[in-house]
Structure formats: structure tokens, C-alpha cells
Length: 211
Image 1 (cartoon, rainbow, N blue to C red):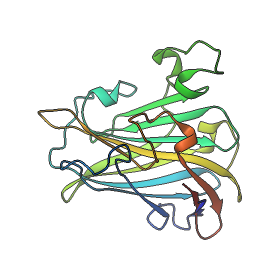
Image 2: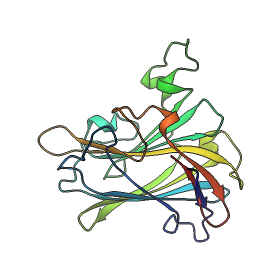
Image 3: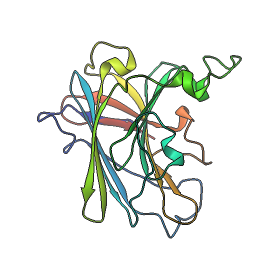
Image 4: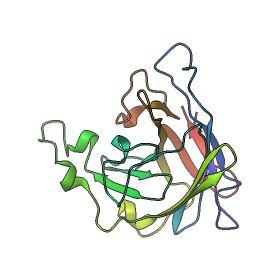
């Protein structure tokens, strides 16, 4: 299925295509899984993300941008790739609005199947190339993101452009392992599998999706 992503008319993603995070690698969701709902829209200048994360224990130890956010507590993640491209971006936002921005030349930082992977430091984008807000909401926290076309090394977004996208989450707590979830159809816990992300198409009034 190819999901149509609508062009925004009010600079927010509130009326965009909707996504829900799941745990496709197991037969039934964990008892600790909490709802995460995401909307995606676009303008010629940027992709717009709006997410609401139900959370019993909002926590992070992040203190600056471009830390290893997934190891520091709660984090919302966006993986995005222009259709037909090998490279993609991985973007993180924490509840206190610390951000991480990776630009990967290919799966797991490899420019080709035969190439050696780049280090974490080599993948980081300085300064972070997208805008975000994070704030408490009833029963959890919320995130908005504005991801400019320049993050994908293109000048603008146009009607008909296709992308592969995945939204993921680490829901941490004071004890135990974080609860992971994703919008992608991953049969294993591995977010770096672009062929399993959702295919979307930028359209005038509604987004197109394939999964």
C-alpha cells in the first residue's frame, strides 16, 4: 500500500496522514506498550511531524544535542529516505527537546554492501539540521518536527515525490529495559531495514502509503 501524505495548509502536521506504532516482531504487544500516534504532512520547504506519546514515566538523561539518545531514556525517532536513494536520515527528539541527527550513506552507515561502516561520530550532522519542540501533554509528552529539504540534500519537496519512512520509540522507565515500537513492518527488532519502512507519496490533499 502507498500512503498519500497531504500538503500542509497551516504549517502543522495536525491534519496529515496518521501512523500508529506497533511491535510487529511479536505475536502480541507487550503489556507495557503505550500508544504513540504520529501525523505527517509536508510543505515545499519541509516535512512536518506531529507525535503524541502516552508515557507512564517520562524520563531522559540527555543534556545536549547529538548524544546517543536511545541509551539515555525516552526518545522519539524518525527514519526517512527519498525513494530510489541509498542514503537516509535518522532523527531523534527527547522529552527535554535534545536532538540527534544522523545522515547515513546506506544501511548501518555503509555506502555499499562491500563498504566498511562509518563510525557514529562520522555520521553525526553538526549542527543539527532540523527544528523540533517537545512538551508535556496529558498522560505523556508530545513532539513536533520540521525537517527541511536540505536534510535530504534536495532544494525542495514537490508533488509526487516518494519516500520511505519509519517512526520509532524507546519508552524508558526507571527499572527494566525500554519498550520499543515502530510504524514499520519489522519481523525482528532492527529499525535499520529501509525495505520494510512505509512508502509514502507527497500529494496535494492527502499522503500515499505502502506497507
